[in-house]
Image (tube, rainbow, N blue to C red; front, side, top):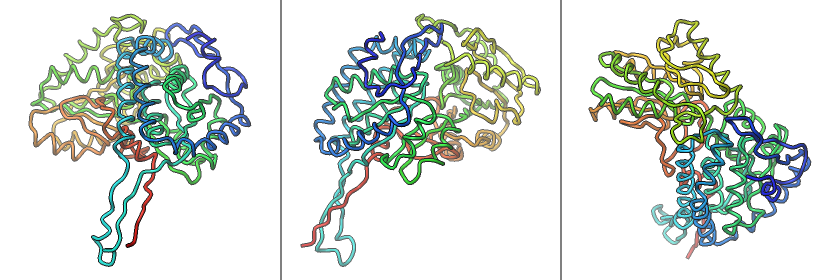
Length: 471
């Protein structure tokens, strides 16, 4: 995107500037203004003052804007995909899929404006209230702070903005400093579709700017997707307001000996290395029952070694760069730590600038960071197990529990295992990384606070208001 287009973007107030760079070759993409703490306070006041107008906008108009924005995004899908490739480092194939998902997220949000309006309350179900009738509506909270990550720079922004707009709220959006251009483009499309300019405000800035937003009493809700350290800081500084946070995972996949092994391998390779492994529900620990362990492992390593790495603009590239050289180097450090502790590196794990070749480890001690922490990198651990009880114990051996996968042809075993796994979602006969944008999405252990998925985020971003009539 040219810098002249950025100058006309919804970013507010100039402080020092942020240089946004291409994640593969490091070249500059744009220079953006950032906000000072004082300037952000002004923007918070203005965004909060616009909340009554957002709440008063008829639902049909909210829905029309969201549908129109989805259509505009679809029309410009190739341009937006190319921006995601440059700014976030996703391969062009992955970027196109993210655009298509974001189109769907906006359409789902438009539908929510027309459907989720409230319910009739059966007052006469309680003795003494027979002479009352009434209902509740779903009303906007007001000003919502949305803080978004780099790994799905378009669709995760759509998952904040779509439900917030559908619910009649205003938003102050702080996208990742690494991928702000995609967020700005989406806000531009919403404005082109008819959204009043003050209903969504984009701000860029350092940690002080984020803390100013989070701690403001004008903000009624903070919706955050990102790292655990930032999540802890938000919880400590937010004060009394609604919080919705998705802080990552360490997803297990269990492969039983009766599974369709070729299908399990194919799905798990994709689930491990999609978006260069920078995927909070990506498969990180694959547990394979011992009778099929060697067969699975050999096929998995063979397919992994065949993945093409490099320039994400190339249609044939499977794994592009990580978000930064530092992130790739940190992932390499964790691989080396595991190998030093006795693990075997079966393929990959070599650095070429920000590109880390997909790595497969086995025999990783449970004391290593690669086992216990979220890697967020193209690195996967594959370990054998003997019994279902052992597999479940290993799968649950993590503080972080977003999603999991289970491969088996036995329906009873699948359902029993899904029930026993402590996670926000269990995908049967698929990798942990499957997500449909309408389903509830969130964790069940540390870092679990609220649910995303358009319908569920809409309810998080609205509140019931009861009307009761005595006759």
